[in-house]
Image 1 (cartoon, one colour):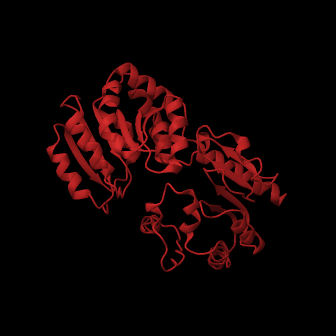
Image 2 (spheres, helix red, strand yellow):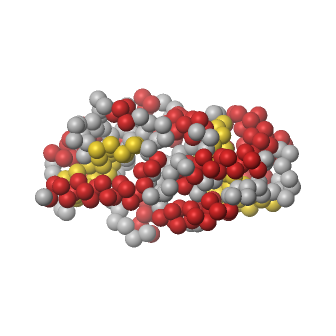
Image 3 (cartoon, one colour):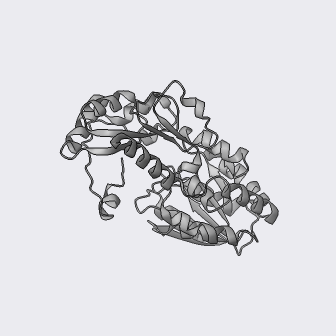
Length: 332
């Protein structure tokens, strides 16, 4: 199972990887099974809390941020009791388990604040919705230019990004649908973004060469905000990158690749910020018609406007200010 440890270290951050338990299942094969979330950890919550405490015990931390579907109030209680952290920020998007954190962040569009009424302590501050989406500063920096160029929308460039690994080759399905069922102009440009370790990378490269459009496959890119700004439409996964695209007002055809992406994707579709293809097998059937509809400037422009209204990109600063306020109160 892959991780971004190498990238984190390259950016100059300290990194401690906890040991993997023997026989830990590959959760990427079981994303649609909520009951399998507990298996993702590979060990008990108590063991993971102890190992986390061992790493942090020397210094201790003011804030510990936890983002894992298999961790809940049990883990948080052990960490707090051990004195590892003064406060916990829990990131959740399922509203299916209890937390004892001081802060709860759920970036989902359409999530109601009362969804956590019986899952949190009274003193837990809830940060709900994509206005708190944790985006890198580059997206905020590109927002103004990106929104300006969408005032005269025209479908000339499509960004295709379906995850760095894309183990099921959904990118290949999209390219096949474009080649066989699309009536788009041959002047269209495709910007296909993938990770260097994607198992179907060579196959996608060959497909790109055979398309009736200009298509470029780009690997391990570091300028995603710029690419989103230059694109007129995205075809992408319905995960955290959805908020990046919304910040830049980028109209999107969303593909739901895991059940935990479904509610956020449907909320984006309901507000007019995206079109959704529910399952991979629906790509060939639905994508050509969606692209035909979105080739009309009025449809593309309307989706761009609704998308831009979802989040302004300043969510990170809002979360940090809230953390600072709570820290100040505890020191008063």
